[in-house]
Each structure stands twice: as C-alpha cells, then as structure tokens.
Length: 128
Image 1: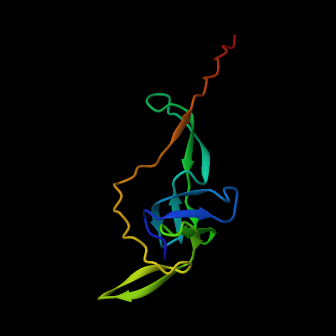
Image 2: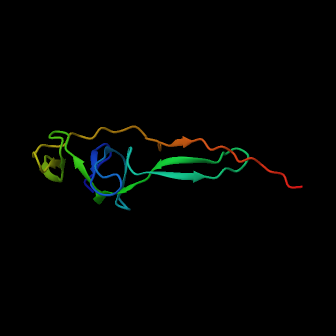
Image 3: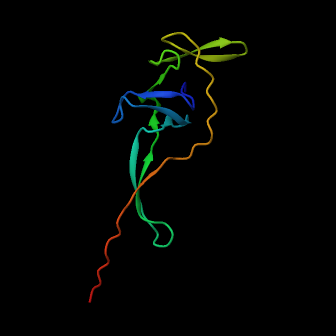
C-alpha cells in the first residue's frame, strides 16, 4: 500500500467525493484507511440505565484505499506514487512532478473523534 499515515488525500468516489483530509490510520489487511473529516456515520448507542447514556454519536469509518488518491505536497495535485531506489532503501516519488515525498512526520496517537447529539429522554407514562 502506497498510502502512509500523515499523507493528505482526496476522495475520488462515493458520498464524500471531492473532500480532502489527512490519513489517521492505515489498515493494510483490509486495504482500508481512516481519514479525518471523511466518511462520517451516525451511530445510535444504547445506554445501560446506570452509567452510560443513550445517545447518537457521529463516528468516522474507514474508506477503501482504492477510492482515494494522494495529494503531492510539492505540486499540490492528486497523483499516483512511484518508488525510486535511494541509497540503501526506497523513496516515494510523485508521478506528476517527479519530486520526492517529504518524510512523513510521526503523528501522535490519535483517538477517534466523536461528536455527540443530545437526545431528550422519553416521558414515562404510568398504567393504572
């Protein structure tokens, strides 16, 4: 997989097509990536009546890696990625401008971003 954590990507297909975001996590076994601000889904969480409250949570879900394209930090265009041998290892190269990708900065541990919507509890009716 050519996409790394910290890359900026553009979504090509789906409900979020045209959006850009930063890669938070890469899941190579399932060929998916988690991108900030893209593919948000609402999830209804049921409370247990004691500690946890019932609420609607907005969660970012992983995208298939084939739906996105990496944006080159040099030419600022969506591009395919090539590799070139440099010294003892390989370097990622932009297919548009031919320049190397800057070394990805190690991002700090990122927690899942969730937004909460307030849900009003239903009024209890007593039966007689």
